[in-house]
Amino acid sequence: MQLTVRTYKADVRDSVLADIDRIAKGCAAAAGVPPDRMPIVEVQKDNLPATYNNPELTKRLVEASKKQIGAANVDIVDPTMGGEDFAEYSLPDHSIPAVDFHIGAVAPEKIAQSAFQ
Image (cartoon, rainbow, N blue to C red):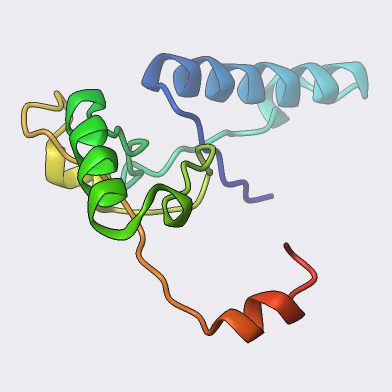
């Protein structure tokens, strides 16, 4: 079995991974699997940390964007769990302030036709 695990915090990720190991072995034990045949849970080491948007830099970006293109054209969205290597730019200790933002444009008539309004 292969899983993708994404969390916003490293300590939560560690806890989730430990829980996966515990549950897999618990299910095997409940099914009568002998100790020498227990599941082996392996974690790839090439995982990416969650992207952290620096609050001060985010505030500056939002204010500047609203000023330049109008508040009605700036949306603040909830965090997502998409896989992204952008987090690497701010380094694991967030010593380089960073903000991941997206810019898009679409014709107004396309927005009017959209079911996602």
